[in-house]
Length: 244
Image (tube, rainbow, N blue to C red; front, top):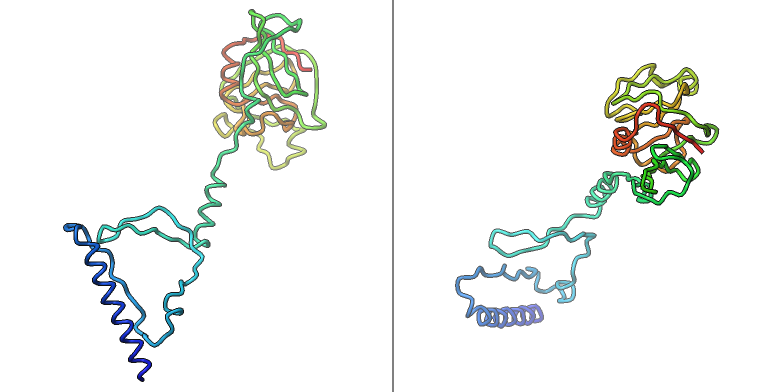
């Protein structure tokens, strides 16, 4: 009991000294909110080391938030709470087309006359030859392995927000496909379509822009919707298209 009384006396003295020091420090801060009071363990016989040992918690610090007395304290959330938020942000990030497949102007030294479309399926680029020795270059998606093709055709028809009727051969490979889909943002043909000769192939838009630059289609040439809309207004029916 004497030992307990001695420890209690030491604690009381320490508290008194801390109180005097804190009052002196706050002497010139009239009008400011006082900080929260110091709270010690009521069990004064417990060793000091145990009283002052911090509790370990798996916490993630976030931005501070105001308390009732105007002081700021950091908010904390558990790692278990933070992880789904981080995953949601990652999953919400949109998939983008690779920068090299965005439209640009390049020098053209080929033999095709202005107004001609040249599609390089190996490099995944479509070129619209211009009169000043340049070409407008767009990134495209091309036929996947087994669906590659090459040749020259003319644009025989143009359509805005075209309907889609998958051919019988495609529906045989993909029985889940509809026989008809009305044009619109969810239609695989996208915003515009340029039909090539009497073939089943088209230059068309896509609601999956991240596939541009890849071999993904059943032979059609895919473009971003904004790019096929730009090309659509620059070419007309009768334009020659070379696929190499």
